[in-house]
Length: 464
Image (cartoon, rainbow, N blue to C red):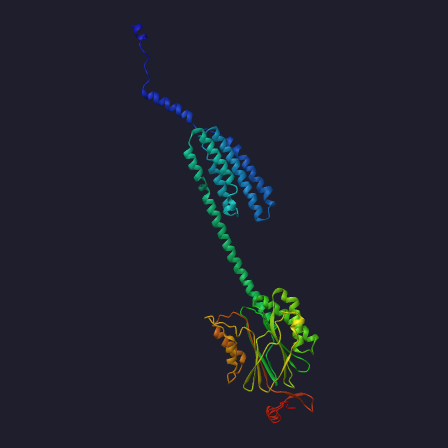
């Protein structure tokens, strides 16, 4: 019996025992690598050292945005590579290690994007090298286990992991730029408005005041196309009580023309003081020399009229440099006083010339002068006012009380509030001649009746 019992075959393990042994062996083979806590602390020390180095040693030496962005990109790249190298080593040692190198890089990149003033393109600099290294790592692991399909898909979609940070950089930088532009433009606009208001006050202080004397009356109306313009008028009287007028229209309009007006005003003041006895043609020629030498190089030219009226003889002397004609209304007749030479600055002295014309003014004559903003006025339909309409207006039988106001309203109505050029209109009324008193030696006006009778009887119009 005992012999039979000893010769019995060994009992085979059941299926449950075999399955349990296989599971134990499989779990032992696939168990992830577990590192002690001190290993993680040691791996964090280089990262901590890099952050401290950039914060204490590098940051105080940065002054510009470009320097800050460059240093920050290097820091993020260094931190990402250190973290990537450590976690990649763990994956090479154990493919089942619980690490995700690209997620760590994403965290560093997102943190930097929250605080750094870089654009989305600049934020790509530190992550592109890490993405390349990660793709090479995944390819190496796929060569070992043959998971090429999953590796290709993960490499293709990996850049999408950084999309939130890129959107954050783009949105935040755009918001800051818009806010800066809005604030800066608003402040700058207010500053410019204040500067233009001050410049206009200085500019208009150069213009003369109306004159209402016993023998003549002068007034003008001025409307710049912008805040300030290039039309200018200057009047003065000399020791002989002669009335002088200079009307200048600098090409263009706006700030450049207005700045030139200030220089022209100073030059006219200098010329009238240094050459008080010279006529309009010579003064205009000297003014042309100033334009030709100093302003023409900046493409600045001007049309202009200089005239002188003698209160005793009623003699009008004038010279016009490419300026629109001025109109003389004399006893119901209209005379156009045309230009005598070229634009100021367009030619030198040898070509410019010094032609001067003389006209005898009668009592009650009116001179109307204007710049090209009058006849070049354009309606909303694109139609020009033109010189022909100006002539028709000047030939009206009854003169308005003030030509300056009448013409200004007419032009502005024609333009319908869409002014394209500066406009200056001046009016000079010759009321009566002055005579020297035989008793006091003072200038006195000739009575209108006596002057009219003398002119009718002799035909000479001298009235002396």
